[in-house]
Image (cartoon, rainbow, N blue to C red; front, side, top):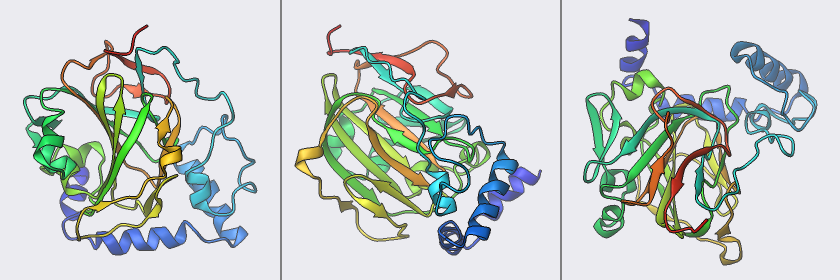
Length: 287
């Protein structure tokens, strides 16, 4: 009952104001305050800190630095076989499978279309029709950096303004078209198997999204889709390379075209993932 109440209460909450307040709190540099936030967050969510690169809390200037923490070298081995697709994040599978024409499953009873999600021209959306997708939810306790699931060339990046609903399981099961309604950053790659899209979906409390190409992107409720300038020298991406991070938690969606991939057995809703582990195989890469 309380869960459903929270879902419906989001329609009334000042979501952008709340996110703006969280943004500022997460960047307080006063040691006593930021240390209190970090240690309290660790206790609340039972954060596993064994793989964290810096000392806690003194190694972090702000709570946000801790939230987007780096891990020690070797903490997330990346499957290097050419024909494998790896998880771009630590998280939990929300949904994974095949698209039915241009429809993507959000949750039981809810789906949405490719063109709504990608906010792109019809040809771009149709490239993924009848393809495959994986939607991965990042909980507050997860490692929040996003990595490349496959090697390729980054050919376009679009920021789509939108709403800031929560993206947790209860909200995804209740609010129609959640992922196409929320703000998102869409990264388009050209890989040996064809086009690949990695979509970073914003959410309530996500103060911003950062990438090596764009820098920090702050939420905007409305406006036109923004085509982000890319640094040509850094557009070749290796499997496991850093793509960016959520400044607070959210969801990542991976899209591949028809016949390009086969998901591994067991990749279904509720499955836990760690960045770098194999989630499927891809065609057209050789072995």
